[in-house]
Length: 296
Image 1 (cartoon, rainbow, N blue to C red):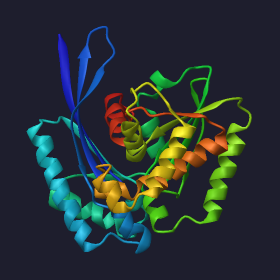
Image 2: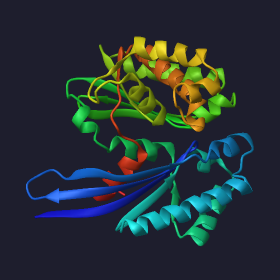
Image 3: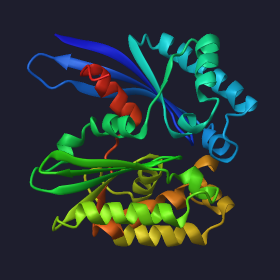
């Protein structure tokens, strides 16, 4: 006999909002399977408001409410038994973030929790990383978002340390990440990785997933530093319009992919990593697993 439970996970990021609907399949004597049933991504760039003006605009509050009403209906149609909605960097920093949470709860019936960078990193790390982590190796896990980047160091299968920096793609696009932040990231990475002989990167986030897809590689294969570096140069050689027309990138992906690639490149350079693995994981996957295992 198998038992199927449907979970919903809503990730309200700085560049986009996502609803993941997942079927968790349980069978006696076997590990549970997490099967993606549906993933809906809505390009509402909250970071543009939060990081430049400090508040979520009226227009984006309306768009968020519409999106949340749609997400609520989709979960109803899919017969989702339990859901959780988490908001990250943009909502953390907008001074009307809590007010927006109340408006959405009232108008769309969705309860949202605003989480800090540490909790965000912990939820993402609670995904399928243990399948990837070889116990005798060291990994730097890098999750690049629109507002912040989370770095987590794993060694011998255990988490060593974690840190969130205000260096995300939307911030970088707006020229809001100063040299002092890059210096801090460089110092942190070097200080925490220098004692290890070899470090491998694990990348998470929509941009690295896109770069991986463009490489045509099989899921378990890593991307090299050389490949990421050449892609960075290639993407920079194209105009925004060319990246949409010739590479088929979404308009809200075609600009942020460049600053994201820069973050991964720097992380590889400063940790001495020659390779980056790109598992299909993110905050929404983490939310589903954390709910299932009773961690949230």
